[in-house]
Length: 71
Image (cartoon, rainbow, N blue to C red; front, side, top):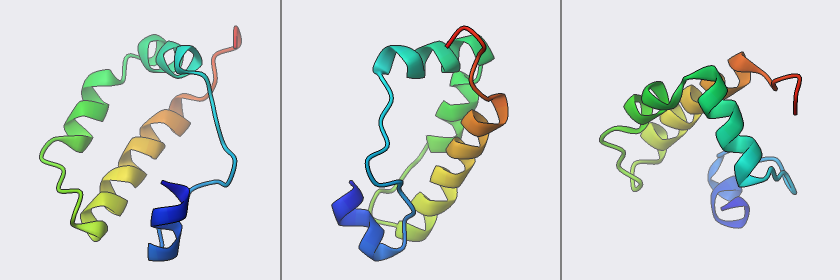
C-alpha cells in the first residue's frame, strides 16, 4: 500500500504497524465499527479523491478515540 499509494499523494506512515488484536481492541472499546463501515460504504477504490476522503474520515474516527490505557 505504501509503495503504490504514496506516489499518488496518499499519506501513509512508512513502517507503521499495529497488531490486529490491538486494532480490534481500539475499534470495539470505542464502539466505532458501524461508523467506520458507514465511512467506507460504497467505496470505489479506483476513485483516488474519494479514497483519500474516506481514508481521512476513518483515520479521524480512530485517532479521535485514542489508545486505551490498557494498551
